[in-house]
Image (cartoon, rainbow, N blue to C red; front, side):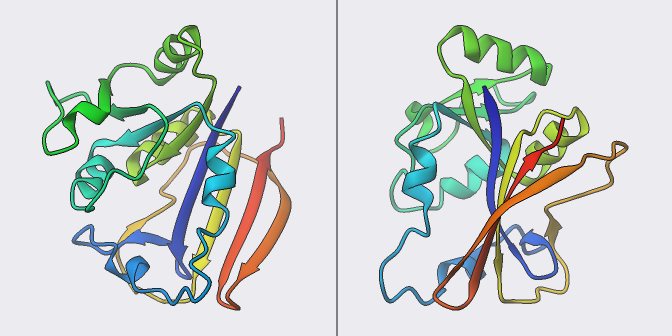
Length: 176
């Protein structure tokens, strides 16, 4: 059972602009039409936990990008809004209980996505792996991947790949 972060950041550690825009990710040159290992990663995953704001970003996409069950973490939503509302399910409450409930349904390996959601999982020491791809841009400000965390969490570097001589994807496993 693993909770895994798979995310891109700017060199200075931001996952989105202050207005939550990720336009800087959408215009990257990709001559080989690579998915940079995302489909291989998805083979390891049983389900996806998205933060509410990340789900709202997905609503701006032309097509639903996921083939696995999606769970939107929100304590305020009563129903999922938008054109993809039938594609996900709202989960709320204590993170450990959410994980246990999903495990009872056979969903053991989770992709955790969304800034606040990742930070919440880290604050409870519930992240087992992180795959972080650095994009060669300095945004200067925005939404950071990491915020203050009261825990010191050691991770072990398990590998780095470079794509198109510009994207640097590094993998880390939580040392327990």
